[in-house]
Amino acid sequence: MSNQAPPRSTSRPQPGPQVRAPYRTNTARHARRLPAYIYWRRRAIAVAAVLTLMLASYYGVTLGFALNNPSYGVSLQARIAEWGRQHGLGGFVTWAETEYNRLRPARVGGTPNKSSIPTVPTVKVTSGLNPLPVPANLKTPAAVPLAHEGVWYPAGRLAASGKAAVYTTFIRPDAIHTSYVVGVAWMDTKMLSGQLYSGSQIPGGGPFPFTAPISSAASKTIVAAFNAGFRMSDANGGYYTNNKMIIPLRPGGATAIIYKNGSMNVGEWGRDFHMTPDVASVRQNLSLIVDAGKPVAGLANPNAIAWGKTLGGTFNVFRSGLGITANGALVYVGGPGLSISDLADTLVRAGAVRAMELDINTDWVQYTTYAGPIGTPVNGANGTNLLPSMNGNPGRFFANWWLRDFFVMSLRPQYQ
Image 1 (tube, rainbow, N blue to C red):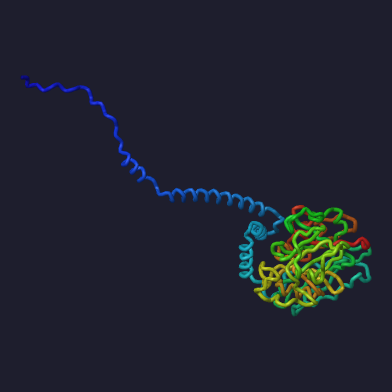
Image 2 (cartoon, one colour):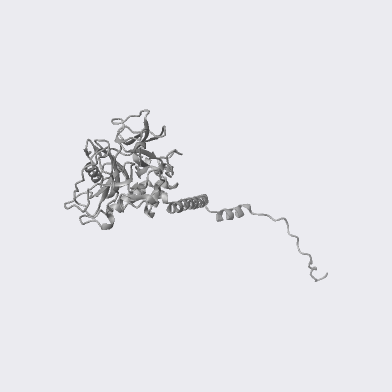
């Protein structure tokens, strides 16, 4: 019997089939997985980031375009405001403008800077009466009048007879804000015919046969051009031109109407005017501010919105207005330091029996007269603004980029 141990096997044992523990492995895998809501949140954040980038890119590009587009205004402030209103930010823009004007009220007292007073025109006219008599000089509301304040002087292109169809002057807006002057223009509608020029943005719905730029042919008889009203989204009124109702006319709305014979009037739609075949253009803006020869009631109410929510009627800012006198002449008022009440008062001083507000703010209030021999084309180089503080270039109405509507007054054929 041997005492030796049996020999060891040199072969390694073959591994048997692997037995997995699915329960334990899946448990570990699930332990590492985050809750489902976290993955959904990540996806939502990624989508929001992409959308934000797209919106930022879009708004950035459009804002850059607006800041370099002269049709959006002269100042960067105006261009940003126009861009904001065009992109659904009108409420914020109105709030910002309101706060800006609240923090920077119009100056009280003082005398105007000499640079703000227009140069007295040197147009020489022939003797004799106009078809419509030029009104008496205006009396200033200020205690002490300035030299030439309220005195009418002929302006712009003369008729073939040597008579002026436009006379202009300046006056203080009230007895309190005496460091401001506003411009006033009187237009003889027997000598002049009116034309509404539409813009591609205002009222929209073009193209139109009469739009900027004023053509070379039309410029041969032009005497004056001036701004129209608010953006149609803020005008609370309608727009009709070229036999087309662009925006329905509002009964009771303040209305500037032009007939096919070139005559022009201001009044209330549905009371003073109705649609007839001889109507060429109708431009509405808010409600009348002068009626029956006096300012309408409620203009001084700070909560009134009948005359526009933009800035409110009680702020003394750049404003403009258009009125009609008892004998049919047109009067335009525009300038700084005007509340809606001051605008109405100045229009009444100029003889208006009915009047409406037009546009507001420095970049949009503009009245320009143009000089030159009849039959000769003119452009911005021949233009003179009613006030030096009107910063719109006299050539803007001759530029194809001008997008707002405006009025043009030209000599009638018998005066050419």
